[in-house]
Length: 132
Length: 179
Image 1 (tube, chains in turn green, cyan):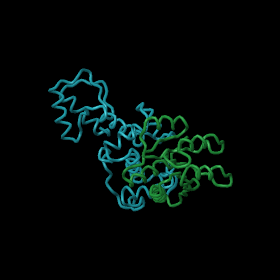
Image 2: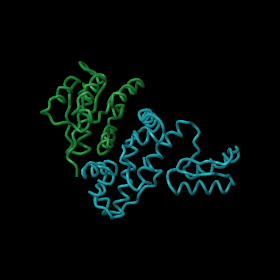
Image 3: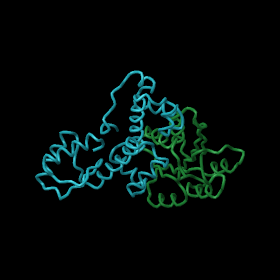
């Protein structure tokens, strides 16, 4: 069986981070979660070659310092990061956002569920599939 | 109309009313001629008794199509596709996945992912009852990242562990009742 999976969430909302991590642990207690409180913090982690890379990146859009849009552009510019599937994880349902982020390389645009219980089903479906 | 049993039922009702058709597939019937009002009402009444209905709006047809793509992918394919589910659903229905996911969750009050998981677990139940594969082999076949991933999901959906389910034979659900 495969190595334990590592998920990275870049999101400035502490409640969303907590729900995400709890849901990931419910999917499989061995899943590792890396969290970053904004785009700048997330990029600093990812650019440091000493840090282990995540298998999947979940990226909020509306964040201080560096937006999700800028963040995905930066991730896709760096060769060692460019193949990591990036899921946009946001409350936005703006069609222009969806189109622009898919063009920038996001594999999937996920609307944050209104029912927190659905986060489990999202993560549990994504893990194990082939993306990118 | 999500199972072979439903297809047979639809065929039987069409034959009874002598309504011509070219093809009957999951969720879709191609009729030879346009349905008369009398036949439409008679079919609707017959289908209603069996928990089926004729869909009228584009949105309800789209949602039924999403469900049928998922059901075919999980229950009627020898192997799960290597491509991820969002690409498959999006390509088959020729719509952006985010649009489909939003339409589905607004109408059904659950996400596409929730629907997929419910059907995957139903398939896992079938594989457990066949007793040909062990749990590790089932988790690999059904694209789980680990046995724990499968076991946790199974327990989340059914309230029981796969081992408990296997040892106590349980009745499986009809596919149209899985959600």
